[in-house]
Amino acid sequence: MEKNGKRRAIVTGVGMYAPDKILDNAFFEKIVDTNDEWIRSRTGIIERRILENGATSDLATKAAEDLLKSINMSAEEIDAIIVATVTPDMFFPATACLVQNNIGAKNAWGFDLSAACSGFLFAFQTGCSLIESGRYKKVMVIGADKMTSIVDYTDRNNCILFGDAAAAVLLEPTEDESLGMQDSLLKVDGSGKDALYMLGGGSLNPPTHETVDKKMHYLYQDGKAVFKVAVKGMADISYDIMQKNNLTSDDIAYLVPHQANLRIIAATAERMGISKDKVMINIDRYGNTTAATIPLCLVEYYRNGKIKKGDKLILSAFGAGYTWGAIYLVWAI
Ligand code: COA
Image (cartoon, rainbow, N blue to C red):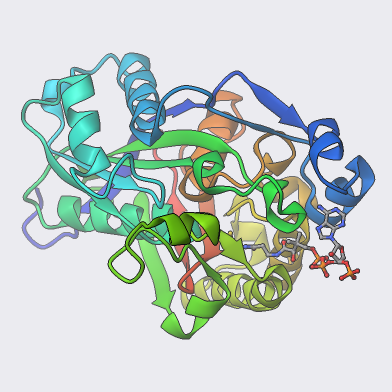
């Protein structure tokens, strides 16, 4: 490493896993009072994936294995694993421990990080900090959620929105300051706790027959309230990170937005002055997979040859907490 130069964290590998089973909008027409046109026009979602057997660690493990295979790397080389999720297999042990064991990452430590739809951004920043500290050389950051495990399939407001998936990136150091993680703006505002939550199962409401009867182990969202703050929060922070780094919309190769609602994504792109063709979208095929949406976009666009070394990307998200943020990343592979 250069003595005076900054050490940057770059993405050197990507991997993903989405279960085969598809739930299309017609499926929801059969179980709740909704229709394909409403879902498409209000959310942009056409279908989403569901993991029928298995847990979040299985999604995360498959994404990690896909990553390792694609760059021909041994799991033993990994120093740390961070799993962003709100649907861990259990409260403990951490999903990261289960993934570590599944893939045989004998030399890694790791932990889970809970920041809902902003989870990948928070985990990415954390992973980059481990690299920038000089202490770790290979950090795997995984966004994984089995959202269908906490969705109430009688609640038409929410059941149509979510799907299951996982995606992973590998972070490594570089001396080239022009590549990798350049900047981040990350925020929390706990006053948003009443608009999007899962009340049951924690120390506040330990599981009882009553908590189950009251459906407290399902996700609750006041969609309208969240929509309003999400539109402003995601658009503002994405614009702010551009300003802070003197970026114009022409400089940016892609906006990589959290995929919660196509209308929130469009509002963010508009505020940034970014045209539609420079916005990564896959909400139509996966719905909202919470911590997995952003890395899933990165994997698909990279593998389709749509991003190249040197491309400037703005990653941005908004989620429960509230949590939100934006990251300015220069692609390095
Ligand atoms: N099918 C048909 N109608 C539905 C429906 C469905 N699946 N879900 C709700 N509706 C109805 C509502 O009951 C409401 O009817 P009413 O006017 O008679 O009360 C009407 O459609 C409009 O509901 P509204 O909540 O205003 O819709 P919306 O345009 O706000 O869209 C969401 C709803 C959930 C798609 C939208 O609010 C959203 O995306 N919210 C934010 C999600 C998000 O970003 N979360 C953060 C990260 S997870």
